[in-house]
Amino acid sequence: MLRRLGIGLAGLVTGFATPAFSHPHIFAEARLEIVAADDGTLKELRNVWRFDDVFSASVLMDYDKNSDLKLDPSELKEIADTIRESLGDYGYFTFITKDGQPAEVARPEVFNVDYRENQLLVFFVAHPKTPLKIGGKMTVGVYDPTLYTAIDFANDTDMVVEGKGFETCKHKVVRPDADAVIAQNQDNLTEAFFNDPAGTDMGKLFATRMEIAC
Image (tube, rainbow, N blue to C red; front, side, top):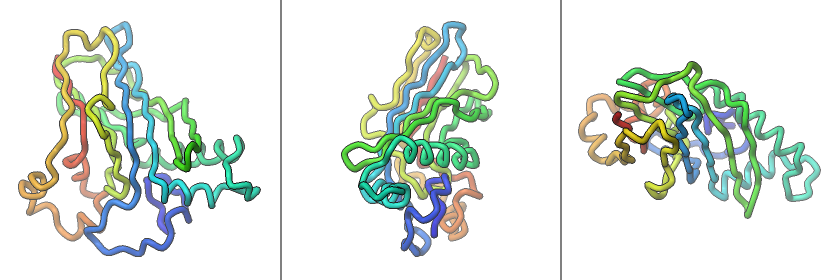
């Protein structure tokens, strides 16, 4: 059994006995709203993830306790609680920096899941663990540091900033070119990285991110 997506939903993605260089296995389309508070601090990060059909079907099979081919409110809550607890080991896949320094993300209080049109949906609101003043050079990214899960923002409009705190800032969505990243970091992308990328902190080089300059 594999315990990936960073969430420990053991048994959901069995049978993938895979060699190195085969990441990712789970795919999710995402939307991120980066919201400023009226006092000029970073208020919250609103995440929506829609998972691929194969992984979603695995969740249904594992958590549909009464075998009615749907997820009841109690079953959805169990999934949400499991994901929230386990994602803590991976920063909730939500990463913030200011002037090159990381800002820790607190445990989300708002965390919900749903199952619609054969796809698992995850909704949660993340906050910086300590108040973070908007300014300088900031980055916000949502990604799996292990590279097992691909968090994809299909369009630049799926990653946005909102609020008066960003009015004097410039921002842009940055999409690293995977081939260029590999070429530039060839010496660091060893077999150990592909076997255990979580221990290398290299996954961020491949991640779509919002860059903000104020």
